[in-house]
Each structure stands twice: as C-alpha cells, then as structure tokens.
Amino acid sequence: ALAESFDLIITDYTLPAFDGLSAIRLVRAARGVQPPVIVVTGTANEDEAVECMRAGADDYVLKDRPARFGQAVSQSLERRRLKQDAEHAEAGLRASEQQLRTAQRIARMGSWEYQLADGALAVSDGFREIFDLPDTSAAVELDGFIARIHPDDRARVRASIEQSSSGPQELETEYRIVR
Image (cartoon, rainbow, N blue to C red; front, top):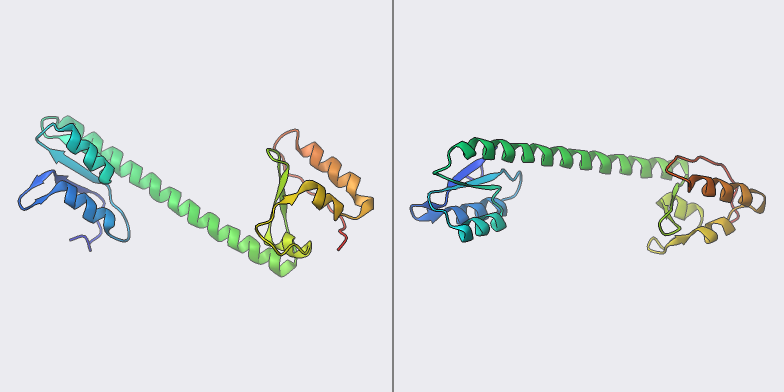
C-alpha cells in the first residue's frame, strides 16, 4: 500500500499481526513524498507515544479524546503543506542560483558580498576566475581583495564598503582590477 500516494496516514498503535510503530518505520523508510502519520491508541502509555514520535509520527491521539483528533489532522496537514512550500521555495532558489552562476560565467562576471560579522568576502565562482583564485575553499579577505583593485579605485571601493557596513543595503560600484 505504501506504493500509493497518501495525504495522511492514520494508524492504530495495536493492530492484528502488526503495530503502528512498524507502520511509521515503513512509511519513513519509503522513498518519495512523506505523508504525515497520526497514531491512534486506546492506551495512555507515555513511552509508546515518545517512541512513536521519535520514529517519525506527526501526532499521537488517545481514543478517549476524539475532539483532539480533528485538530491533530488539521495541524499535520498544515505542517505538511508548509514543508512542501519550503521545499518548492528551496528548489526555486537552487534553480535561480544556478541561473546566476551560468549568466555570470557566460558574461565573464563575478559577484561578492562583504560579511560584516567576520570581515570576509563571500564570492562567486566567476569572481574567483576573474581574480585568478582557483581554490574554492580558500577564504577571501577584504585586504587581499582591495590589494587587487587598481590603485586609483581602491579608496572609492573601500569607502563604499565602509558605507555599507552602517546597515544592510545593496551596493553597486565599478572598479578596475590588477591581474
């Protein structure tokens, strides 16, 4: 049955020749979309509830509290929707980043972002290529970057960076580099 696509799985903790914990483990081991799993039980065993939640259950509902069941279903489906939205946004972001890398490579451009916290630069692959920095793991320090800017442009670029450190803002500047 796990080959089918489900919006929600509801299982009793105690089933004939099977149990809810095994059902959770099978669902979580399956590939593809992971539907929420709600465990329903007639016994109020805290250890079982903890074990189910650790195995991947989204909720645990006691049969003697039927009013809570609707809330558990609504919340589980909402969490699933939010997770799917986040996954779609993440996929869109990855696609946009790939498009930017491709556009920068084609245009022979690069980009950098000054990290206020540590004073380092986060740089694109195009930046590394332009500045002849092949090692993608090496950090780029601000002073090393400034040293590669044409001497006539250094003061202006440094002033622009210092201006941007007063708060989050986008900065665009043109400068020449020395290779």
